[in-house]
Length: 432
Ligand code: URA
Image (tube, rainbow, N blue to C red; front, side, top):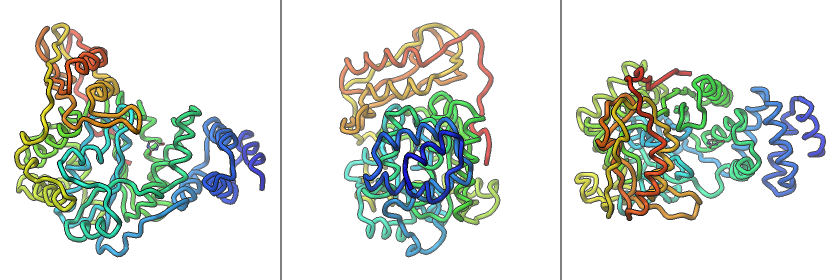
């Protein structure tokens, strides 16, 4: 078999066989196929697409390219969740403890933030002492004892995705449905859970900007999940404005605590209840509307927060900051951003909000950048709110006034103020 022929076949619109896909993935991971040939095939896939069968085969070859996690040693149904990424998306930290407090195990591997989106692992590490680099034994032990544990991805999980994603990033082939679907689902399959809930974000802060594209991506991923025998459901949720009111690591953990105490922002609370309901439904706990009420009760009775506290403690984190969030490290500089005119906020460019938070120090532009856990944004106003000129719309937290000035430049273009109130936006657009 020759890589040249595989590239030519896809270039001409052909359908690759399982052997050809395996030849490519195996050869590329082993370093036998050079980047230039892999790039050519990625571009051919970008232009000609893949059949559902090819996408499933690519996903499976990628999933098997390195270590896989066997969770069968942990009793009970294990449910995973994946968000395609957003701004202010702290849902895992709300949902995993709620689901675990109802007896469904969540053994989750999460990522760090990159670019304008935040990552769950960075948010967790803003809790002093908390470790996300646990070995497999300790990870399993916490899942068994507590019911949920969230750790970083281990070194050799899906090496094919690590290499291919880096290559896609520099060859203009990221935004391609079969490549995104196989990238996400290979990691979910390798992570070993029985059921997978996908939170496919849509809107200005998401990877997929339209609901139609998000549904197509969701359908492709659900099909792959079902094909490999994992019960899979996707929700298409809004990312046309940041989720909740806080963006930035320690700030988001504080909002997680508020939400688990029943005092969180309405949009975040409702999306979390929908996600939790669908995870519980996948795990066989009943119909989604019944499960939603079960989840809501875990907020009202305090068991969701107690489980979050227990998970944080098991991972070495300080529970004192969770009980009393003023103990979180505080930013040196707090700056309020005024509205430029009277009116209603009609739109928010969520990606720009995310970039502003990175400017404040809450994210990293390059992998090696360090994060300021206390940095970020509190949104005092969001889409649909009435504002008056000069009134603060956001509060910035940063290490210096200079960082606030840089962030204000990004944020100014992120908020559109118009003369009339916009139509209310949906939080959940579809279930696939
Ligand atoms: N997230 C992933 O893990 N992979 C993609 O290709 C896109 C988003």
